[in-house]
Image (cartoon, rainbow, N blue to C red; front, side, top):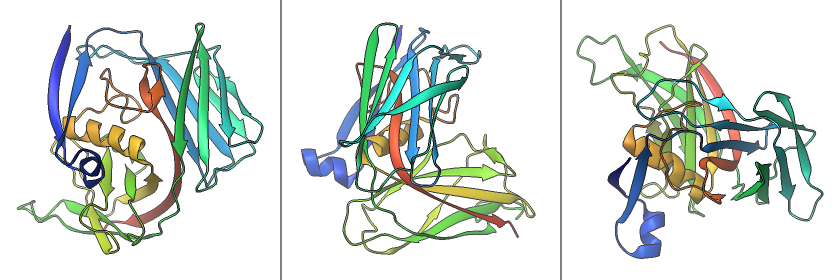
Amino acid sequence: MINKIRFTIFSVLLCALSGCEKVVELDLRNDIGQLVIEGNINNLSERQTVRLSTNVSFSGGQSTDPVSGAEVTVSEGTQSDHIFRETTAGTYIADGFRGTPGRSYTLRVINGGTTYTAVSVMPAVVELDSVSSRIDDFDIQGNDRQVSVHYRDPVDGPNQYRFVFYIDGVMVRRPFVNNDMLSNGRNVRFDLRLLSEDPEVRSGANVRVEMQCVDLPVYTYWFSLRQQGLNGAGGGVTPSNPPNNISPTALGYFSAHTAQIKSTTVR
């Protein structure tokens, strides 16, 4: 059974295309066994990773099942394909190349006789200036801390960002995303605001933030999950069908992004 959930994405990038609010239907499914693709290409590491699994039931609590034996490649413009080799069940690795800002990357996954493709363009680097913390204004007792990231959005845009947030080495599963709808060309302080079900940030905690500059389809994927509060395996893959860049239909995403990481000890 499919439960239709409607939500509104307020984004100047999407509105620029349609001239109005963009309404997207998100299908929450109770069926299982759909392929989940989690592909990431970045400009930091020479080891790139694609993970394949099958999805979980929306009403259940079981873990995802890894998918082995697939053929996984990523092409980089006119260069030769990078072949991803399965290291552990469902995890495919390619060593020896870093992503380059401005280039387009095409993922191909052959599994069960079906070829899945996805394209992502790696944006330019936007510098992450710092990560800071302060007493949370919404905590009456003053025990919780609010963590924020600071950066300057470039005048040339548009720009979209995803933030991966770790507290004492544990990733917060909630997606954090931002764009420059209201901050084009400005200094930005973006709060990584947590909800009651998320881990608390207290004085003395070590926090680490990875700032990713992402293209519009990847931003839309994470924004959709953020709006619905869906936090599945891997911090964002759920048994839902948010808009993504994979064809034919599969769950997950393929992201070619720049990445920067900064850490701080919460005071």
